[in-house]
Image (cartoon, rainbow, N blue to C red; front, top):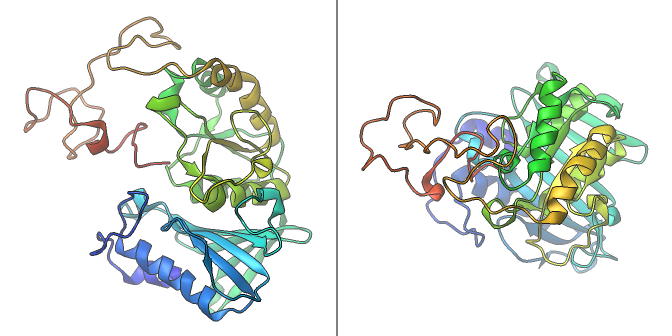
Length: 347
C-alpha cells in the first residue's frame, strides 16, 4: 500500500523525472503512482486512468465501467517534514468520461490521509464514511465513522495563497481580518489533504485559495484535486466555490486534464462569507504585485513594505539579523525561496 511505502522509503528526489508539469518528483511520488497504475491494470472495471503525474487519459480495459483520476501523493512539498500527506481519487462513469464532464458527474470520490494513523474518507450512497487502516493491529480497514457531517458554522480557517491578502485581493484581507477579529482558530499546514480532512474530523472548517492573477495564480488541479474533494465536502453538508463566479466547483466543466482552479471549500456559512467579501476583488481584477509596492489593505495600508530579507534556506524567513552567505543582501529568485506563507511549492 501507499501507506506502507511511505514508512519504508526514504524521501529523496526520484532518479528519473517524468512529470511533464515541471513538478519535482520524489521517489515516494513515483512509487505511489505506480501502485495506482497497478490497480488500474489489474481491475477490469476500470476503463481509463489519469494521474496528476502525467497529462494523458490512458485506456485500461475497453469494457470498463469507470474512469479514475488521482493525485497519487498530494503534499510532496511537506512530506520531507514528515507531515501528513495523502492520495486523492475521483471516479467518473465511463459514459461521461472525465474530459467534458463536471465534478458533479462523479459516481464517487475518496481521499486517504497518511498521518500517525492511515484514514480514508469515501462517498457512499448515504453520505461520507471514514475508514481506518490496521485498527488494533488487525489487517484491513475498519469503518470508524458513519455519515460524517460538516457544520454550516465554523471557528477554524485555513487560508492558502495568503500573500494575496495584502496586495492582489484587498477583499481577501478583509476576510482574514474578520476571522482574526472574531478570534477564529488558524489551522493550516500547506497540505491539501490534511487541511481539508480536518473538516471531517472536526465537523467544521474552511479552506480558501483565491486567484491572485499573474503574480499569484490558481494552482490546484480541477480533475485531480478540487472536484473529488468538493464531492466529499458537499456530500457531508459543506459547500464549495470556484472563487470566481461563486458557483460550486462541481459545476465547472473539465476541459483539460491539467485544468487549474481556485477554491473555497468547507462550512457553508464561511464559503458564503468568502464569496461576499473576496469575489468583488476577484471580479475587479487582482492588483499585480511588485516588490516595494505599498500594501493595499490592513494596518500598513499605503505604506511600502519592509525590504524582503534574504533567504538562504537555512533559517526561517522571519528574522532580524541578515544571515551570512548572502550576496549583496539580495534574496534569491522567488522560485528558489521556500518556507513561510508565500512558499510557491505549497498549493
